[in-house]
Length: 162
Image (cartoon, rainbow, N blue to C red; front, side, top):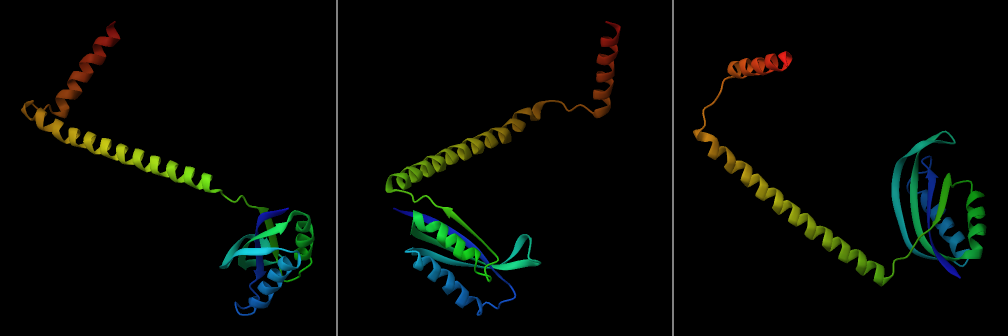
């Protein structure tokens, strides 16, 4: 039974981008030797490693998605570990979405977008209300800060007596 996998592997920066091509082909041939079929390949370019590996701080990252019989996965992983040019590799099983899952996800995204629009409209309406309120308060008399301080002191003094 074939499963869908994803592999991310790193080649050292001591190689030039042109020199990485034979090693990329070597990894692809390792997958094909194990009866694998590559469905997607991507060069992620030169990136900084999260931590130094074999005194390297940068590497060329490559990503493949492929279908491979379950029983050949260990053989492929072992072959990659024995390849000296590959600094690190990681193979993970990847879930392939069905049409039903894709349509459910699309419906969810549409509902979220609609809800977001409603919230934005509600916020705009509240903002308009806030703009209108100060216009109603124009007729009220303004109180100075000193008067407020005096009133506050009076209130605090009366609370202490009780």
